[in-house]
View (cartoon, rainbow, N blue to C red):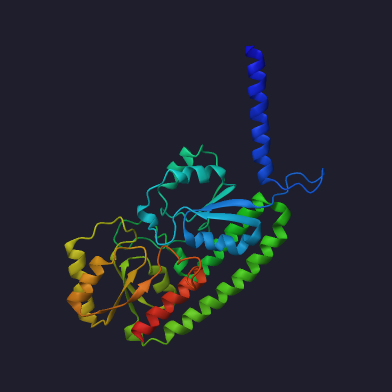
Length: 306
């Protein structure tokens, strides 16, 4: 009797395993086994998720752990996250210490997942407050997005080599769009009078942007929103704004605006607008892509400072 139950349990387990695999594998005939219908890709942030969509298109099904408007610096996992990670074929992370929570999440999902770091090949800026930590916000120099996209394409090809030409073609088209975006940003920022090119934000997320496009950037918090804001930090920023007679400061979609609003009130500098920093916008909005979110940011900055 025990042997019969054991045989039955084994048979059911094999059937369930086969059913699960069958749902993820497209078979056109008996000779073409292992040809995927869609790859399930998990990304840590919406910016990476959008690039995956552009390279993978209909070949991928995607999910971003941090949703729209969620701060990845302070993210806390939900019970659903490890389940989605465990089902993924590949995981894309930003790296540069942005997602310190991801390693634990993968462990809870059973470990042994394919993880690709999209910033591989980028020399990061480092924390200018003396700690030497890498600044993870590399996406704000549009030229770095070409590195992100190339690493994503390589990751998808490693999982789905039969569609290599497809991913490479999409990569080429996306890089052309990013090159066009980069040139547009340069023209727009150059239209701001040079002594007005000062960007004050909630946290120090825009240093790559400042270096690439010629702006002086100051953030109330450091490169991570986990950093505690000291009274001295607030005072120093207020003094800086007054000394430069700045007319605008900018809040961010994924950061609490309260302190910067207080600084705006004390300096008479207007809130120039809301910028996307660690997240893009809602999927059904113009800002729901990386390119759309950056265009929104640049238009907001230029309109306020020009």
